[in-house]
Structures are given as C-alpha cells and as structure tokens.
Image 1 (cartoon, helix red, strand yellow):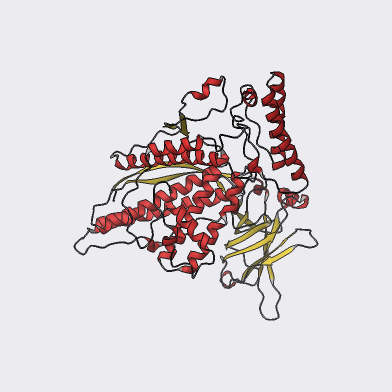
Image 2 (cartoon, one colour; image 1 turned 90 degrees about the vertical axis):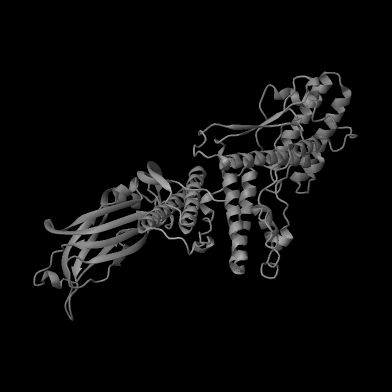
Length: 568
C-alpha cells in the first residue's frame, strides 16, 4: 500500500499520543491500513506507481554496492555456480551455526575447484572468505557477537535464520511485491468495471512480466549474464502452507489495525489502545513464520467484532416502499445475517484446528456477506426495489469442535425428563424429581458427584443444566470407561420434611460414540432394576474434539446469492 498512497503516519495518528502508550503502534497502524489522515481529504483513487519507476528500482537493486571491492565477482563466479546445475538450492538451515557451516563449505569447495583449474587469484579469494566464515563460526560458538553483514553470501543460499536480508535483496523483493500489488490493483479495478458477474476460473494462475533485468540463479555460460532477462512473477491460487499462514497473520493484523483506527475516529481511545496492542502481538508470530518456524494459529485472536453502527444509513423522507418490498428486504437481511454467523462459526472452528486455508476461506465468505448486507441497507434506504437473487445449494465439509472447552473437560448436559414414573404413594403431578450421578473417574472410590436442582409438581421436568467433569483423554482407565462402561443417572423424588428421598429409577449413558464424535445426544430409558418404566431422560455429552480423529460433518445449505447493485 505504501507504493500507492502518500501516507503521513504522524498526522494520521495525531491526538493519540496523550492516550496511547506506544507511539510506534500508531505509526505502524497508519503504515498498514493505508488510510488517509483524518484532517485531509481522502483521494478518490490510487495512482499506481509507473512501471518505469519499478524498473529503475529493480535496476538499482541489481547494482553491486561496492564495485571496487576485490570480491565483486563472488556472486557471478562459475566455481560457486557449478553445482547449481546439478543439484537444487541448499536446504534451509535450522540455526545460524548451520548456515555458517554451509556457506564456509561452499567457499572451501569453490577454492578447491579454482586451484584445480589453475586460477590462483580466485583460489586465494575463496580461501580468504572461507577463513572469514571459520572465524565467524568460532566467535558464534564462543557466544561472541558476529557481524553477518560483512560476510559474502553465495548465490542461491537462504538468509541466515534470525537475520534480515541484504539491502539489495530487500529492494529487489520490494520491487517484485510492488509489481504484484500493482497487478492486483489493476485486476480489482477491471473486475469492478466489468458488468457481468462471471468469476475467474479456479486454479488458473496469472502472470505479470516485469521489464527489468534479473539475475539468474544458475548460469551455463559467462556471457549469459550480459543478456537481458525478464522476470515473470506468477501469482498462483495454490500456495505453500507457509505463505498461506503468513498472509493469514498479516491480514488478521491489518483487521485489528483498521478496527483501532475506527475506534480512534469514534474517540474511543481505550478501545483503540487495546486493539493496537493486540495487533502488535502478531509481530512475533509473523517473524517466526518468515523465519520458517511453525505457528499455532489456534492461539490467534478472533477478528474484531462487527459493530452495527459502523454503517451509516441515510433515510430519504420522500422514499416509500411497498409493504411487500419491505418484507423481501427483511427476509434477505435475515438470511445474510444467518450466513454471516455460520461463516464466522466455521472460521473459528478451523482456526482452533490450525487449518489456515479453510479459516481464510470462511472469513472471506463472511466478509462478502457483510458487504452484501451493507449494500442491501443502502438500496433499501434509497427506495430501490429489492435486488434480484437466487439460491444455490452449497455443501460444507466442516469439522465440529467445541473451542470453549479445554482438552481436559467433558461436559454433561442434562436436558429434561419425559414421562417419569412416580414412586408408590406419589401422584404424577406431585412428582418433585431431580437427577444425580457419579462419574467414576479418576476412580470408582473417588468419583466426581453432581446433581440437578429439584423441579416440582411435574413428571416431565425441564432441567437444562450442565456439569463440567475433569478427564484425562489418554488415561487407560478413562478410555476403558468410555469404551465399555459409561455412567449411570439416578432419578429420585425429593422427600418432604423429615422424609427421605424416594428412588424413581436409573438410566445408563453410554459414551463409546465419543471415540469419533465430539458430541453425543442420547434419550436413555429409565429402568427400575430390569423393569421398563416408560420414562426417558435426554442427555448431551460434549468433548472439545473426539478421542480419535476428527468429527467431520457434511451439511448442505440453501445459500442466498444476490445480484446486488454496486454503489460508488
């Protein structure tokens, strides 16, 4: 965004210094959101960076920083590149020490090859660099600081973990990203101008050709470096998981930044401060992803909540809609809200499972639903007829999970009793029933005991009470309890003053389905010994996720697709 908009972070975040603790967060908010300052008129359109300027940037990046240095041809040396044609680039090092060892070995190999070819000058040069790396390795092992910027980098080698890329490399990457953003912006503008609603073909990559010379990673001949090569940047819909995770984290951080700016514009400084701090918390995860480390996205905060008052609805006094049109608008709005809620629910579930691709997919669908709701409100306020729409049958393959539960929780939810039998001497409408149970874990001698409240004067009591039990998913005793035993519910009638409680019956709840399901719902029969009483109890049992595998749910939804008008 910084290539397209002239941003002034100091002016944009002015007024927050007295309330926010960290001024750096304000500058970063302005840099990421790309919003214009509050006191300036926002330009109607972005002015893309000309391709000539991108070419100049790339050419500057290609120049050697110090052409007079004796080692100026290290990156172009045949001895360093000879192995590139036979084998792929070296594997990414796990730490700085391994990276130093890889590079030292490469220069030592190049020195030996130069000696064999009779080129003493190159042999001495590579040998000197290998000794530099040897000294750096000794210093690193001794815990002394090492200036990695002074060490030459063999072509094709990944950066040292924990270190930033060289200035020239950073500039080149920035130029490619600039072209990528430029292409994305142009594509978005063309899509907005297109009248038909046909989408792009899924899986078709797009290519952007950049008219500037690019270094080759492997040269077969010396003269090949003099030829002008063209870099072709491919933006494919199928990317590696690390790139997807990085994009997911950066987009989530940007959402919090924008929410912080909106809170600031509403003079809610406390909320803005909290959102900025949350956004700042993404930095360690982003850095870890860039360095090749895995990040548990189940710990990532959910997107900031949507606020109903962030959309300004302008009512026109001279506009009137028929009662039928109002009903259609109301139904469409309700369907879009339901779809938006479903998308957010599925997104949270996949977030806790660490599935970046599915999380991003449902977040995008939720954002589309939100935009459709806003356009629908605007069309209704302007008195336009309800937009054309149709329904599609969508199949969703989701994984059921209860993210509010921990791995050591099991929730027993006693819903209700139905047609419970009354003990001798008690009428059905005088039954005061309650349910108690002992869960025999960690042992039958030390069970976890719970009971419901008493519901009076009915034989079909509604309880709707939940009890959280502590479990150990990997304990053999618990797995045996789930597989074969279950637990028993005891139903009793509450006795009066100086009278004991009378038993009604018992019901057995089996748990074997928890092996493959995160929730089971059973209606169990109430037994009096071996005698059937006709009474029943509805019970639900929940785990965070199944004991074995995932609880995959396939559902079909009638999905609203509207041909909503576009407003500028």
